Structures are given as C-alpha cells and as structure tokens.
Amino acid sequence: MYARKRLDIGCMDLASGLAYGALARDEAGLRGRIERWFSTQGNALACLSVRSGLDLYLQALALPRGSEVLMSSLTIPDMWRIIERHGLVPVPVDIETETLVPRVQSWEAAAGPRTRAVVVAHLFGARADLSGLVRLARARGWLLLEDCAQAFTGADYTGAPEADVSMFSFGPIKTSTALAGGVLTVRDPAVLERMRATQARYGLQSRWGFSSRLLKYSCLVALSKRPVYGAFVKACEMAGRDHDHVIQSSVRGFAGGDFFEKIRHRPGPALLALMLRRLEGYDGRRVEGRAARSRKLISILPEGVAVPGVQSPFHSFWVFTIVCDDPQAVVAALREQGFDATCAATLSVVPCPPGRERLDPRQARALLARTVYLPVYPEMPEREVERMAAVLREAVRGPRGRVQEGFSAPRLARG
Ligand SMILES: *Cc1c(COP(=O)(O)O)cnc(C)c1O
Image 1: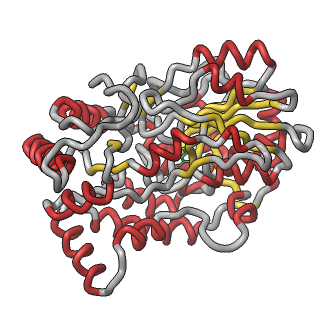
Image 2: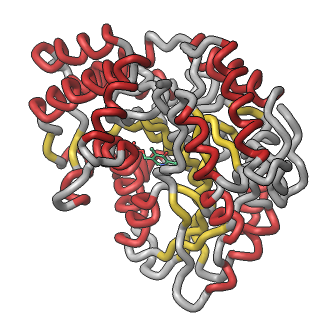
C-alpha cells in the first residue's frame, strides 16, 4: 500500500536530530544562522512553530479589541483560534478552487471599518499571485500576513517583499521538516524587536520532549514505507480502528493541555540545529520530483476530476488533491488497489462571525467536502502514477456506468 504521505525527512536527519539533542548548545548562534538564511537584512525570527510566531506577532501588535482580520477561508483551525484569543474577529473570505485564494473583489466585499489585517494562506503547495491583494491592502492600510506553511520550496521564496509578515513552518508534515519549528519574516523592525523580547522571556522547549518526538517520527517514517504501511493498515483493521483516525491523531502537534501554554516556548538548540541542517542541506530535487509526478498525473486524469490550484502561477504540489463528486467511493476504490487516498483533511473552513452569515464560505465548504488527497511522491514509479489514474477513471465513472457530473466550476486548465 502506498502511504498517503511520506514525511520529508531522512534517516540521517533523524539521527542528526538525536545527536543534537545531546550535543547542541549554542541557541543564539544557531537561531541567528537560521534567521540570516531567511533574511540577510535581519527581518526573520525563528520560533517553535508558525502558530507560536503568529501569537508573538499579535502580542507585539496589540490591535484594539474587536478589530477584524480577514482570512482566506480555508486554513488550520488553530490559526483563527489564535486570532480570536487576542480579542480580534476572524472574518472568512471565500477562496476560488482554481487559485485557492480569494478574488480581490471578495476581500473588498468582506472588509469593514474595523478591518486591520488580512491573512492569506498559500494552500497545497500552490503559490498565489498576491499583487491585487497587495495593492488593496496598501490602499486601505491593512497589514498583510502570508501563510507559507504549505508552500516552502527552499531559498527561491522567502516571502513576498510586499507582505508585512511571511510565515514558514517546519512542522512534521511540511516540506523539509524539522518535526517542529517555524520562521516568520516581519518587515516592521520595531514589531520584530518586541517579538524577540517576548520570546526571550519564554521558557525553553524541553530537550527530552524533542528527542522523544524524534523517536516517534522515526517510527512513522519507517511505517510509511510501502510494505510496512500495508501491514499497519491491516493491523488497524484487525484492531477495529480506523487507520485514518489513528494517523490524524498521532500527527497533531500541541494536542492536549493548555494550547497557549504549549506554544509559548523558545525553540531549543536541538530543534534549531535540525532546522539549520534542513535549510543548509536543502535539495530541490525531491520537490521537483514531486511536482513532475503531479504534472504527469494531471495530464492523464479523467473527466470529472478537477485539481484545486492548477491556475496558480506556481505549484509545488506539497500535497496532491482532487475534487470529485463521490470522494468516499473514490477513496475506497483507490485503497482497494493499494493507494491510501484519504478525505481526512487537517484544514477547516473559517467560521463567520455571528450575524454575518452572508459571508459563509460556501466554495471552501464545497471544496473540502469533495476533496481527496492522493499519494503522489517522487518515490512512486511513473507507471504506478499511471495505474492510479486508471483506477480513478474507473471510480469516477461510477456504478451507473457513466461519467458523473464534473465539478461545477468550469473545467480547470491542466498545468
Ligand atoms: C501547518 C500549517 C500551519 C501551522 O504551522 P505550525 O508550524 O505547525 O504551527 C499554519 N497554516 C497552515 C496552512 C498549515 O498548513
């Protein structure tokens, strides 16, 4: 069985991480090198996670309570929960399937007199064109935050120069993962200084905690190898457990306990050393291989299957998703043939503030309800990608023996 995802980390990285746990000491030096990798002008801050960084930024800004933050409508729930925690009101702005970001008019329509900032997420590895939003945000005096957690592709993109904040994640399922860690570039030096000062007062991440995380993920990396993964899925079946659930609950960061207490720590030297190793050793070949396999698959996808984000100017296919009419049936057909596709998403739809139901992000909701994540990675031989497309072709034809209605959006261009 092909696992739904391969964690983007190798045995040597994991082994190095364990060694850093015992040996790494120079917290300030390591952090400085990571920050200079991102910004030679000193605009970057290395943190425990993107969520920790966002929380630091909002502490430093101290916007008036009740200020509104427009958010592209699909993201991980913690992002809007952090915004709420600061007394701010997240306001969803619906995204387009083709680009995975809102149209400029949609941002405008959701804005109001209390809008102070916008957060736009580049999803699935696509990198959106922000030029229209940049102009609008400038004209209105909004802060522009860009969430690049799913869009890291090495030094070629360290954030849009026009954004006030760009956020990069090195969490477990992200590209070039260090199993934790985030970097924010922050363009306002005064705000960045306040963030640094606050972070400096935080306690240090637990050294033992990080080492045990390395051990846990070493097991997960071993598990995602094809034969082992098949055995794991069977074992879950025998135990009467849904393997979707087992996996989703094991990769959640900061689960249990007080969330804010957990994210408010400084990254320890072992984590910083591993982040630095991943940055300095970044090799674009894996991302290129992933994108090449993805484009191959797009070129042979059947009718009735659309690929979100295909109209983005750039797409690195951090994950490969399709939208189709009967996602459950498609997942079942793929699993039957040894491809562990899933509908289980870590993303959710940003809820509307009370009384503003007209802003309900219907397109994001429809997208999420019809999305299937496919296993596509460089280790998969091309003929297996072809076989997966053939399984999909059968699956979307459906029991009635005809092609089902395609996604209601106009048929998407094909890469
Ligand atoms: C993973 C992710 C985050 C959070 O990153 P952490 O470093 O784990 O806090 C935020 N936004 C999106 C869209 C993500 O995928």
